[in-house]
Image (cartoon, rainbow over all chains, first blue to last red; front, side, top):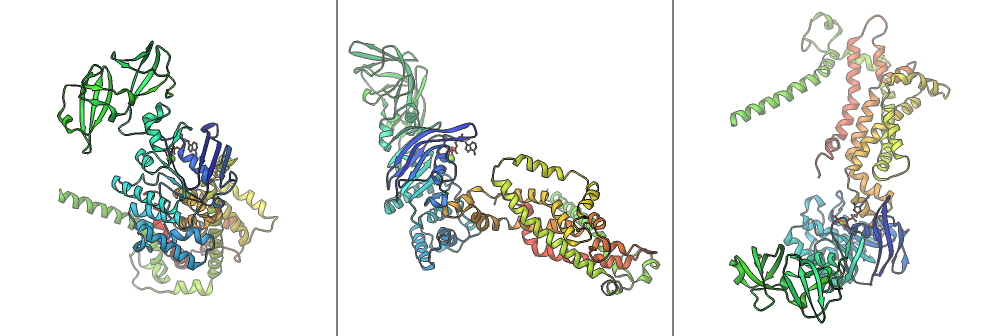
Length: 356
Length: 277
Ligand SMILES: Nc1ncnc2c1ncn2[C@@H]1O[C@H](COP(=O)(O)OP(=O)(O)OP(=O)(O)O)[C@@H](O)[C@H]1O
Ligand SMILES: [Mg+2]
């Protein structure tokens, strides 16, 4: 196991810059998840750590040793591909033992290690099969098995579960987490499924446009997003945003929504008077059926029961937003409902999208 | 509806059958003439099968003609060409498929360019080049020329097979601890066996039936290949159709054996990439 230090990493394909200076320190044994929308450079970063892409500038250290110019085979890392990349002409057992055979490990050692991994992953009855005779979930396990047999310095995962159906994904997610608890291996996991990110990560790295937006524990990112991108990306259903103008008068302040409604704010945020800003609130924090002076009337557009709770689509002024509630009374709701946006749960973002 | 479907099925089968008959008829005629005794060849008129068959032509060809020499020469030339071309084309095709390098565009363009000339144009210059090197009238010279002419197409063929193999596989192998070359040899090459078989077969047949260069570069019987040898039956005063056909039938044998050997891979190979496995 090892730490991985990434400093000022840049990557360009020809003249096209893809990563704009990434700094990241991954501690020994940590499970770090890279999230971000498609094309933000997650895979590129992962592949640079693996040695599959050349580094344009910056430095990658594994276990304190600079690896920029090291071939993948000399970095001692394992990787699970989205496509699994199992060798089609080898049996499951041969697939799993390939790395050990390349390293000329003694046969008895190989047999015992592979058997151990197979048992851990429930692959025992499948060892003589070819990959094409396996289901997606089984292939996924073989790919995991191939990674764990040789106790590498770190595991890299590039969207390993995205080809599985929802139920299997849930199951494998838990297995990966258990595996990590067992092995304690430094892991970097790329996904754009934010449930995976939230459940697996010790720390999440949110990326957008080749730039790290925020690094922190899952709940830090959820409760305290650093900017509009992270706020909107983490959480499902996503955070609601209202554009408007921040008004300050003495000790009190208010927020004039673009639709016309005005939200009184008791405390003052760190925004200049009259500046444009964005207010964010998570759907589960919107209070439905509220009473009191600061309640506002919102039009009910749609009610979506998810079984676990209810997602209510609302319009306030001309701005659409969502509320999430566990209260089944709201199932048959129609017309208008009084809503309240509790001040402690509000997030403010300045014009540049930074949290204030 | 089902009647229509049966009709369509029958028409389909009939069309295939008609095509196969059309394609194979010359071969059948070859076989037929080769077993027709000389006496009956012109006297019986056009018949689907002679009233009496004999192997006299085969016997003559094998015992009393230079055909065994031609045959051996052809085998050496075609076999060597196929192996050399396939080996080189595999490496070149892999490079074209996987690596970006300076001049790649021009190399591809040049290779395409070589495919554009009618070969007849090149006979004289090639003769002029090979002659001082002592490579005319030699099997080595022929192998050299065939190799040169087959490599571009074989390279493109191999490249398309490599393109069909996901890059993830060798990346996985490299992470597992292989160098790029080991990944190529242990992971990619075994998966390209169908493509290699197809390329081998293609080059082998191309070289086996090549006439032009063989005719021009080789004089005399010692280094002649069998297509040239076939022409020797034409010479003199008449055409020995029976013997010529017998020689032709014999010449089919290695090609058939070869294809039988690789056909398992060939079917996969020619359809590879059509469907994602
Ligand atoms: N070989 C390449 N040549 C040029 N551009 C590339 C190459 N590979 C990736 N890119 C570009 O780099 C950017 C980042 O790609 P990358 O694969 O890292 O995205 P990603 O975050 O993994 O996305 P996804 O979630 O869809 O997998 C993309 O805009 C992509 O178009
Ligand atoms: Mg990706």
